[in-house]
Image 1 (cartoon, rainbow, N blue to C red):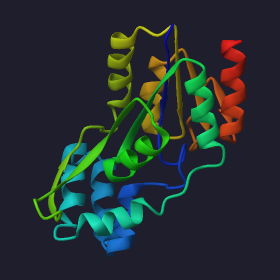
Image 2 (cartoon, one colour; image 1 turned 180 degrees about the vertical axis):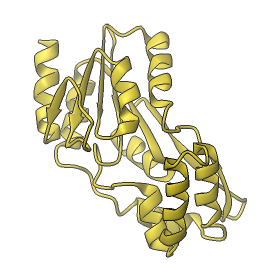
Image 3 (cartoon, rainbow, N blue to C red; image 1 turned 90 degrees about the vertical axis):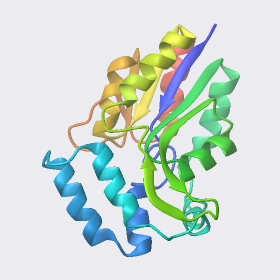
Length: 207
């Protein structure tokens, strides 16, 4: 018996709004980053181009600088306890983030989750940002990734937890969707304020 749960990362499991925005602020590139975001949301560039433009602004910065930020990000209250509860109850756990693997990979390792998908900055052999990026998770593909995991695992129950517009595609693939402190216009089957509530809902589903 396998169950599957997919989490968004930022604003859901950790207290970070967007790794892209936070690195722009760290490196002083937010003005330019904001321009690129506006181009994307106006439909003038696609997600891949947007990710590349953002990453190009950080060329020459080091993995150490980026990990200094990634390692400073804190967990949401109840995150570790929720993951432990899920492991005890036959859930395979996936993190699907349109943020960056430097953060998603750290959280996945610490929590011991089964799958992690995020966008990867590309570093050279000296650990310096090349300005290139591998945009594995664009604004549409969380649903596609979740569907592929479902096909592979054939779970008896699939749950998705997130807070933003780009989580709606995985909400559609899940049997049960839970929106945590959702952005305006985002709704799940359940809308909650905390991960403790997420745990209670899941408890109700499996009992």
